[in-house]
Length: 355
Image (tube, rainbow, N blue to C red; front, top):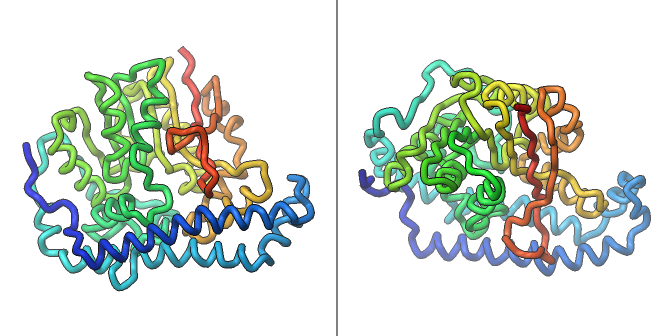
């Protein structure tokens, strides 16, 4: 069934120019400015990981580091809230966008919960500085999708989700997949496309994102092999042993440690014997400079639980839940041999439920 547009805002010339300017400035920030900052950081004392606190104290006094942090925070604010930011653009088209979102969804594709209790951590933080978060605004999913695709985005790499799904399924096809924190469905559809008969259930706390995900999926031939449920990853309304793979993309760092442990235990319940869990996320590098930028990103991009994830004994927590074969491997979101610019320290966290 083809979906009548618009499910995305119309981008006028002034807004496109403004967002392209932010994107160009972000390339300057993550490229030449980052490289010069790295050079200055290499001259600082206390390079050993045993002296991280002292190294960071020296680093934050560098004027270029202060500029780097100022740009990281303010470019994100400008992307959303500037005169030609995403929020003014979407708000100016609210009536048409809300009408498009109210189109009927295919039977069985979308299940929203009228009585869901949103976790406190989800209500307390506007992650990524997304104004109002993804909680109450019916257009939040459209804003989120526009932000993820904007040229001024931090992690909006074209094909990232496809690369992750391809790597996870390189040696095995999973027939039944649960995608936790699916957002507007980009990760869900990436896993749908890994097998001709693969079916994927995407869950999220945001009803706005889920409605958009379902409508977008209806527009695709393979979209019928996906469905969307409003639920917490720690309490999924699905039977025991009903999935072969449980996955998430950029979710763990947005959860407090207790929520991550609860979700891990729930994933174990949901997996069939021999099933696997695979999370794409970020963990701090040993390098003091990169570690400082990781923790700085946590502060500047409204990601308070990145520090929680960094402090966890993930292997111990996964093994306590019953998993074996725990691994953490680097992931290149560009599909290349590396980058000389700033990038988040991507990893794939995997484990298996015993037969």
